[in-house]
Amino acid sequence: GAGVSQSPRYKVAKRGQDVALRCDPISGHVSLFWYQQALGQGPEFLTYFQNEAQLDKSGLPSDRFFAERPEGSVSTLKIQRTQQEDSAVYLCASSPTGRGGSGTDTQYFGPGTRLTVL
Amino acid sequence: AQTVTQSQPEMSVQEAETVTLSCTYDTSESDYYLFWYKQPPSRQMILVIRQEAYKQQNATENRFSVNFQKAAKSFSLKISDSQLGDAAMYFCAYRSAMMSRYALNFGKGTSLLVTP
Image (cartoon, rainbow over all chains, first blue to last red; front, side, top):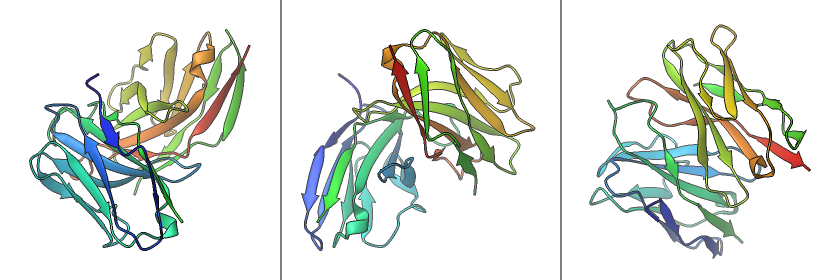
């Protein structure tokens, strides 16, 4: 299929470990979003890329969170020195156009990575 | 910041019946977009329906329709002829039309149970 894929699907980390979560968006999609979904909650925005440019990182909860999309396709969300409160599902979404495009652009979501920090 | 409220944590409907999920939002903007997303247990979010705020006509997609009341800031989802496959979490989401605010703001979701 040509959907958004994420890896790993599940990640268990010990507190203090660094983790890296990968997102493969739909080919050719300009926009890429990361969201954090805590248990029983709706997703919350973390950061936004238009091609390789990170245009919005206002949702990143701390400087332990870092995201990149160096070639404008695959993106990695890195969490340093993980804490228990980082336990959540991390969702990636992509959409065809960037800012200035249609506001009704569908965001296509991946299956998410469930991170558990012990 | 815009907030989205879904006041029904859980709803239940019998197969073939109709159910309405509620959503209200708070914004000072006049131009924006509203969405309903479905999240089955597999976790992959799927867009159900969307509405542009400047359009007065309510959006419809097959068995799914919305009741958009802009003045009341209400955006409810009606599912007709409910099917077992409709069982999922449903999230209402708001997106600003401002270019600097591109992300979706989600409500906390409503869990829909469909009984045979």
